[in-house]
Length: 259
Image (cartoon, rainbow, N blue to C red; front, top):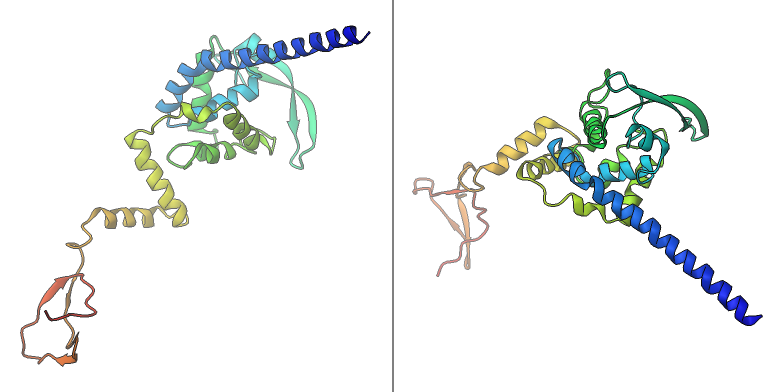
């Protein structure tokens, strides 16, 4: 009897391990399958590849959803693509976070890459009434992929936890490695975004700060005149008004020590 129990436990454990390995294989295979177009399209549109990959994973369940299998729609984008669409049941959330089911038309794409490109176009161009609707996902506005993912909550999806779900996926599968090294243009954009954030989003202020930082810290400063009283080791020494006055470029003069 004991042998039978041990054997049953062993079989159960073996099946569980194999199931986990199978799921892991499906997940890693999916990431590898669409990695190249996701990275290429994201970078071309100044978006974070890690966020787009996380979206594809969440929206398509690693390419296993009915929508992705039947319509190559990996991002749950509604509407029609070149007149092609499919109608499917979908879960939505009210403004108060209550979940409900409804039917909606979703875009049907000829290829996976077409779905990726269309999603990037949507994020870069927004809606008909607001072209900056998804501006929070752009690399020149979002300092990190975490910020970009959170910007999609209540904009891309009605699920208020959407951004948290994306970030959980990014962390679990180490998707930040897809972002790689930022291009020089993105680095400049990140600096601008950081300045805008620090200055309350004021574009004019950030431009002024950048211009000020671009000039020499010494040569650009106005010249200052040595005051009438210069301090040395023996105390204050009077400089006559008729004496020659020496000028320095923005050097804070607090004390001059005679040698």
